[in-house]
Image (cartoon, rainbow, N blue to C red; front, side, top):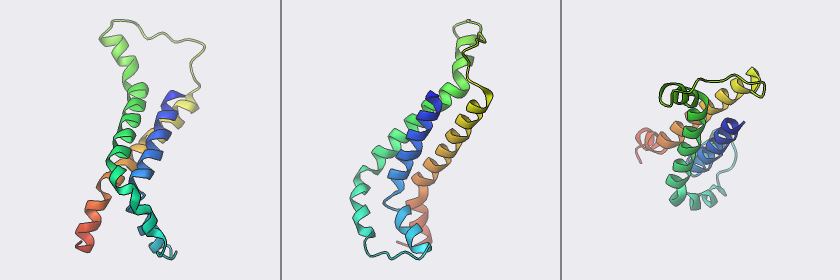
Amino acid sequence: MREAIGSLIGTLASLFAASCCIAPTLFVVFGVSAGGLSSLQFLEPYRWYFLAVGYLAVGYSLYNLYLKSWVKEKIFKRPAVECACEEPNWTRKLSRGITWTALILLVFATFYPYVLTKIYGG
């Protein structure tokens, strides 16, 4: 469950990081008036902080999902013990899906302003 929470935090951070650039573009693409979208510009100075929090949260989720058991087995020489308290398989799949979606959103939010300036020559 911690992986899903970390992934959701990463997703929210990526949405906040991209809100200054992606949100106005999406509004214009879908035909919503762009008159009040300049109010999202105040988030631009905080973009890198949101991205850092997002990458840390997704990194934590990836560590818990993929590397934690490997580190216990290979580095600390402790066998991975299967217990009855282990999460069901569907929650692990859901956590992995959310984590990979959050990572894709973060990468998109990181490079979107640069791609947009190359497209429109800003």
